[in-house]
Amino acid sequence: MKKVLKITGIVAGVLLALMVIGAFVGSIGMGEIKKLTIANVDLSQKADGVYRGSYHKGRWNYDVEVAVAGHKIIGIKQTNPAMRATKGLTDKIAAKIIEKQAEKIDAVSGASVNTMAMCKAVEIALNQGAVVK
Image 1 (spheres, rainbow, N blue to C red):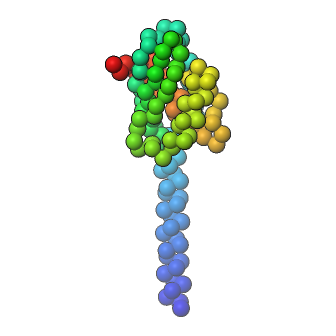
Image 2 (cartoon, rainbow, N blue to C red; image 1 turned 90 degrees about the horizontal axis):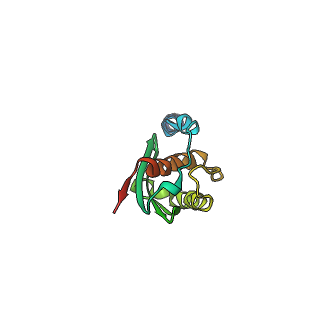
Image 3 (tube, rainbow, N blue to C red; image 1 turned 180 degrees about the horizontal axis):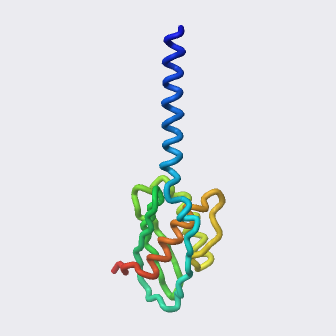
């Protein structure tokens, strides 16, 4: 019985250590993202097309394609397959950006860091991104 308790204690300790390490690694870059400045792009200066851009920091890796037509954002697609699990969230963020026609939006509830990172990727796409033909 003592041997079982000892093994259980060791397993619990290892799991706790892994959780602490995971929390630390998972938060790398979060502070920097929270301090990002998002600038709205003058859409009146943007030609119709699809603009590609990326923002990567820690576990937040957004690659986006931003479709512009008639000087309006008409679509945003998150293209990084590693972020596939966040599709519902990225769809909400994209919908808010399209609704406001601005890269700087209020955070989606419970996802302020993801919102900031994706908004930065959209800003970069529109300011520096390559136009997809």
